[in-house]
Length: 204
Image (tube, one colour):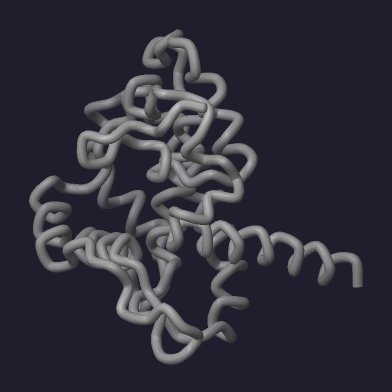
């Protein structure tokens, strides 16, 4: 019984995070407040996916307001569709499920070119893959989305974990960087803490 209660506790946090990401105006975690610096300025994490794949997916799924604002019909967020498209392009999404080993194989060239992150990636991919598998068992009972959130959650998990464990020789000692680590630990998504469209996070 305790394990079941714990599992639903984790699922509630994940579901809440997805709600926050889909509705930036309801930033209940304060992800966009408190610092003017972005994650890119603190830790130079290499791009894991092929740039051509990323640009193709961004063009196929431009950011537009969600079509469904009520509780009826399929739900979705452009970020989820882009992430799903990228994972498919990497061969890391099989039968609508994240394939951790395939993702690890796809990023092998990046790993070889970035030895500072090589030791972190195996455990990171494994941890995030296991986490997504647990969450998927719950989300299949939720209102069917336009694009499944698994791919976006997995990518956010991978980058967020790498950021938290950023190698010292890559980490930038700037005011606010440690605060960003704390934000990720409390549930803010890595990509919510990046610079978007020339706009930085608003300071408090």
